[in-house]
Image 1 (tube, rainbow, N blue to C red):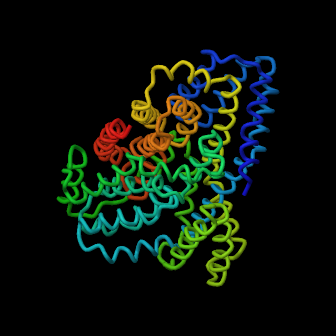
Image 2 (cartoon, rainbow, N blue to C red):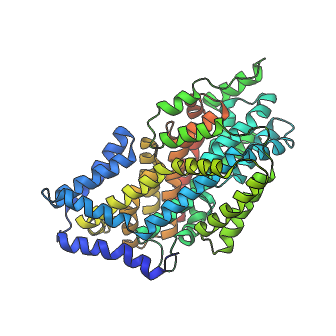
Image 3 (cartoon, rainbow, N blue to C red):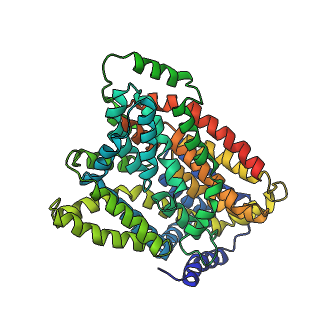
Length: 490
C-alpha cells in the first residue's frame, strides 16, 4: 500500500503543475465541460463516453491546437497514478472472487440452506431480505443470487415476482452502500481520496466512507421501507397491489419472464457488458451441486482478513484468493486452468467500473486545469448555506442518477464539484458524502434501465418494466423522506 505522503503528492502535484502551465483564470467557461458531460450522459446514457467528451471539450477550451497532446499527457498522468492502479486491482479482484463463488455453486448452496427457514409468505420474503443483507460484497452478486435462489419458494406461497424483485433490489445497492467492505465502498472510497476529500492518513478513503454511513439516509430508509412493506405496515399500492392480487389468484406458478434477458441487453446502461458477463457466468454455474462451505469460507476470509489488515481490501482479497484456490483444487471443483479462466472472466465484468473511474480522473484533471472548483466556490459560496447543501445535493444528484441510470458515473462527475463547495461553506462533510451516496443508491434502485434494476428483475424472473413500475412508489417515498431528513440533520 502506498504511503500517505506519496499518495497526496501523486494526486496534487500533477494537477497543480498542469494548472500553472495552462495559466487559466477561473471563469464561466469552466462550466462547459460539466454541461457537456451531463447532457451526453442524459441523452445517450453512457457515462464513460460523456466523461471523455467532457474532458475533450475542456482541453479544446484550454488550447484547440494542443488538445491532442494535452489529452495524451493527461491520460498518461492519470494512468500512472498509484490510486488508479490500486482501484483496478481491487475492483478486478472482487470480480474474480465473485465469479468463483458463482461458478462453484457455493452462493446457490447458501440460498438452498436458507430456504428451509421460510415457512410462509412473510417468512419467505424476510428470508429474501436476510439473504440480501448477508450477500453484501457486490450488488451484481446480490441481485442475481438472491432472486435466483428464492423465487421457487416465494412462488410456493404465491408471492408475485414483482414483490420478490422489489425485495431483491432494495437489498442490493442499498446494502452494498452501507457495508464498507464492498465494491461500492472501494469505488467511492477511491474517488474520495483522488479528490482530496479523505484526510492525509486515510489512504484508501474507507475510513472517510465509514464516517458517512450513518448519513446515507436513502439506503437506510429503503431497507426500512421494504421490511415495513413485507410486514404489511406500509400497504400495497398501485401496480404492486395488482401484481400481488394476480399472484394470489393464480392457479399456476409463474414462469420466468421470457424477455428478462432481452431487457438486460436492450437497455442502454453503462454496464451492459457486465450484466451480460454475469448472465453468462450464471448459466455455467453449478446450481445444484454446490457446497455451503465453498461460499461461507471465502466470504468469512474476505471480511476477516480485510479487517485484520486495517480495512485494507486489497490485502484481504489477496489472502482470500490465495486460500480459496487451493480449497477448490483439493475438492477437484475446477482445474487451475479453469479457475484462471473464471477469474479473468470475473475481472472483465468489472471493466465498466474501472473505465468509469479512469475517465472520471481524466475529467477531474481537466476541470482542475480550467479552474472549475475555484470558480464554483467563488460564485456559489455566498448564496449556499451549510444547512441547505446536503438536501440540495441529494435532490439534484438523485434526479441525475435516475435520468442516466448510472449511479457510479454521476458520483464520479459530481464529487469534484460538490465537495469543494462543501468545504467552502463549512458544511458537515460526512453528511454531504452521505447525501451523494444516497442519491447514487436511489438512482441504482429506481431507474428502470440501471444495472441493479435489470439484474434484480432478471434474477427474480420478472419482467423488467413490471419490476420498475411496481417498486417506484416505494423508492420515491423513501427518497422524499430522505430529502427532508437531510434538511433536518443539517
